Amino acid sequence: MFYRIREDIKVIFDRDPAARSTLEVLFCYPGLHAVMLYRVAHKLWNSHYFFLGRFISHFARWLTGIEIHPAAKIGKGFFIDHGMGVVVGETAEVGDNVMLYHQVTLGGTSLHKVKRHPTLCNNVIVGAGAKVLGNITIGENSKVGSGSVVVNDVPPNSVVVGVPGKVVRKDVPLTDKNIDVDFQNLPDPMVKAITCLLEMVTQSEENLTKKTDEIEQEFKRLKCKHDEQEQKLINISEHKKKKLNKAS
View 1 (cartoon, rainbow, N blue to C red):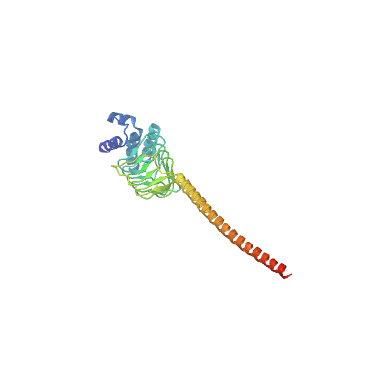
View 2: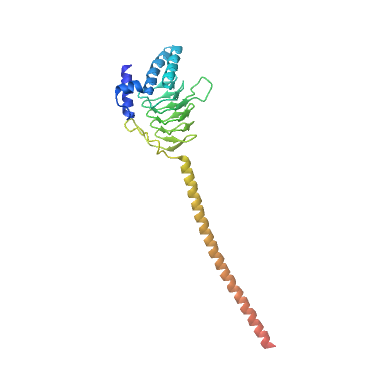
């Protein structure tokens, strides 16, 4: 138990530059308090003391603003930064070295007693305000952008953003030694789509201009040819008139 607490404190020092002392982390980090109380509640729940497990979970929610169901399965190195408004549902599964920011929801999408909450594999980071809903899997080393709503599986080593969440980058591993919490420079799929549309419009305008020039050139060529033929007919007509005049 104490080893796990020391491990949780070490994770906070590794991932939060604002942490200054062990005393500060122990007394001023609600994410740590929520995880510590969850460990107790989870042990009671697994021992079939369901009411005590839920009561401790409820107390932790009142104390920290973080609600973790005691039946949820959470690995080591779990860090909740700031924490207020975080919800982890009953059948949620969280791997090792996972990091959540405030107002993250690992929510369910079913009223039946089945696996209805998401699974977060190792080294996943979920940005502030993101909602991960349903029995889906977020692959290891992936990152969910702030404010995203994820309702489909996410492959490993990916970045997902948007509502609904779209995978905008793949093969970007995030390991425990290379934690990337830069959420302000994530790709924007809407901007990308609009940029593609503008490029298509620009290309279409260029093609239209080129075709217009070709049509104008062809029109000029046909007009010159028509003028030449018309002049020939005029010349032939005048020649015939001269012959008639001479004959008369």
